[in-house]
Image 1 (cartoon, rainbow, N blue to C red):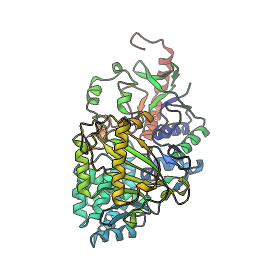
Image 2: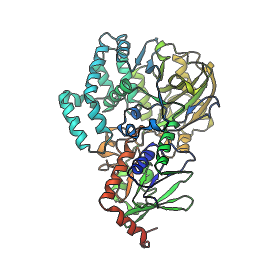
Image 3: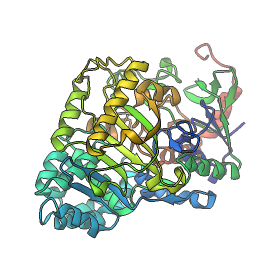
Image 4: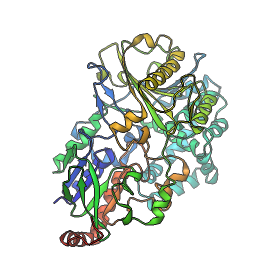
Length: 538
């Protein structure tokens, strides 16, 4: 019997499995899909000559993550590549805010919007430089981060104390107005806040946008050479080199609980896989509680709290094979790996408000990826492998546009929404559509069918809003990977610190499992396995 069974071969599950294998545990990972990776996979499904990332594509959090750095994945074949510029936000009048890993280039770009904004950016980067190490340590460790939190508190005090804390809690619109006279810096902050489901007027959206831009300034938005799945492949190779196994096409249907402890999992095919020490679940919180674990094994308060669980925005994605570079009107966008397409901060507010009202946005904010620009191996020379995603409501009540979209996401609705996204790009890149050789549409229902953790294409495992973060994630008082079932750990982005490819939820769960074992859990689990099931057991 394996010491640990990990449910799900997404990045968090694979990180957890690797850390347990490093500790000498035997580990078996069961993955429902026929390939590992969760939302970190690529294919050639748009055009055989083009590599397309099916879900996630660029990885600033992975580059910053001490968890992934500790795994030394470069020793297992992973290589990173960068576009010349990190991110650009072009406007209709030809101006363009550009984020570069060279701080002087970023500052020069912002100064074109308003003199002095470059200095404001440099000042913020100095704040980040002082906070970076303790902030990242606190972010990527279990909540509460006692040691890292103490170091972070000391750094915050040195950096301005309550004033700095206030800055991080501000809505991104207000933060941008306080920091920058011109629109360029405001656009970089607000667009990055909407990488999550944080409207420009939402509390802490300023802190999130600030964090993402500072990560981009420091680490860039790197991509794995050859496709996003190369990150997954490196994690799998590392695990298998330490004796772990990954079994794909094995959907787990149940966590077997006896005497209040997780002792095994049962697959959809009827196989029972015992777990000698722990079960770690890289699945969404709603899928685990009341899904894989029967409600009778869970506290009533947890189940009640889970009824208030909030998903993040649904996602709609389009992949393209382009015959040539994107013809951006603004020169600064051509060299960026990531391009934000929206007319300004007001347009972002309008977009987020329409989603809040349950309406499909008529002018969707598009987060556009130029993957060949970032990694020349993605498509033939002179071409571009590109994609864009936007957000839509999880429950559609109406269409702010003229297409009558109702959230059925049938072929007609998919094509109409894809055309709407393309029209947005065309406005700032005239001639874009003429360069499309092929496209693939991934609606919210399609994304969920490809990865069950992506409920309606929700990519962050639950809202990033403050009321479902830290000690409130996924429910109040459940900010750690331990669950009410002994020996069972939540290892997905549904746990603190949440979404993004950084491995922290998986690492936190693995460390919790190791602590549980050291406290004498294993003999009791083995005794539970040896006992015949009682009348309340399955």
